[in-house]
Length: 105
Image 1: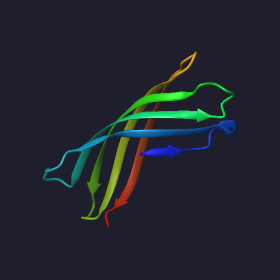
Image 2: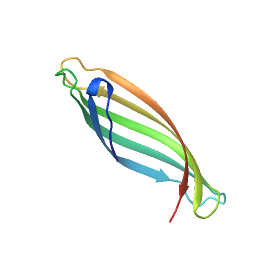
Image 3: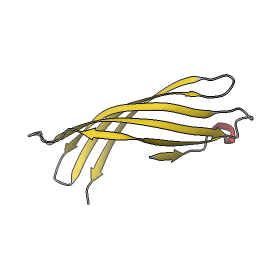
Image 4: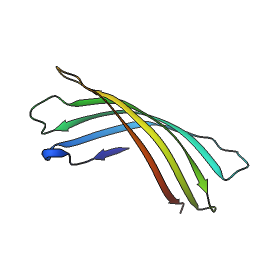
């Protein structure tokens, strides 16, 4: 998983995440809960010459509800905790709530 965004004042963050997702299967319900853990590394470019290399951990949980065999509705919540490197490291944390619909081909 990776993402690239354009930040404030022409800063350019890039982050690479690698991790695992464990899904609970075998329930007699159309639900499929999951837990995911990811490690992330990134860099913020064009930020006034500061060393803004990022290291972090992201943990989340969610559930997929299968409306039909191919269509699902999902809700997931994750927390990203990390730090920047350099002379003056800064800790940060973000939270994310994702609601989505999916279709399996």
